[in-house]
Length: 409
Image (cartoon, rainbow, N blue to C red; front, side, top):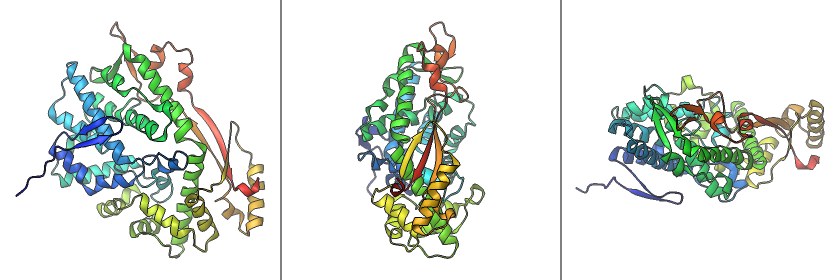
């Protein structure tokens, strides 16, 4: 009887070779729940702006695990005691931190699976896997939930300087071609230390942290909040909302059975049972794209028009402004579009709408990034930095936008 070699390596364009540390991690990666991440885009519809941005959440999760291995090695080298069980818990928690993402996740969270965030679904997946793997994920779940007494372990997974952010900035920068996001994660990891079970960065790593925060700010404006990505995601949200509206009225729409189920039922966190979780695990980007290809020929004017916009990348016009768009302008555009296309003002809401986006490089309210000074005192990065404009990075910058059909120009 042949034995499967579970100590595999992956060839990654960012880090080179990524090794799987043990058989349990291999089995988790092989699980259908995790393999689904190969079919979930890391950057949603950003490929409509940056053609190379087609990498997946599978890539990202493996990258996070790899740099977590580097972080564990760096901390142990400095004398921080991390047991084998704790080490494994860190690898499992970071590997599975994004497993709850749905297709084009942010559009899904506000339309099909209403107000159930991917973090909550990730936890449900981890709890289900814990049952299947006979309790071997127990400590990882504790860490993921923030229930473990060693605070630095949660900070490595979810904080303002975690492995998740360090990987996605570097990876998204590489695949999009936007070089501003290329952070020096290796340097930051080598500068990490732990004081009283809290993660700190040694003072000589301060400039790398400053670069990291500035890179994140620039990546949000240039990539994640790019106006074309923003309007495409808004259109997709509207499509899913309209599809659900029609389905609940008894219309038969061409869609896969998992997608049809979520359109026919109102799912909340309280009703997310194992059977529903299993159905969710069968949803991926291909369900949505396949549905859009079908819906572009549907007799409903709203559903077909919006679906064609995504399929053909012929999107609504979007204008950004520092000031809020007035009700008068929005109403004027709605009235014009409804008259030209014979639809109601309520239906025109699908084509003319406004909103706002906000960007904040660093939050003073959230868990701070702590700098360990040479005199052994600990300071917040904002206070430790000698950059005069760095305090401005912790302020919210808000931009307002207006979306409307191009023919209204």
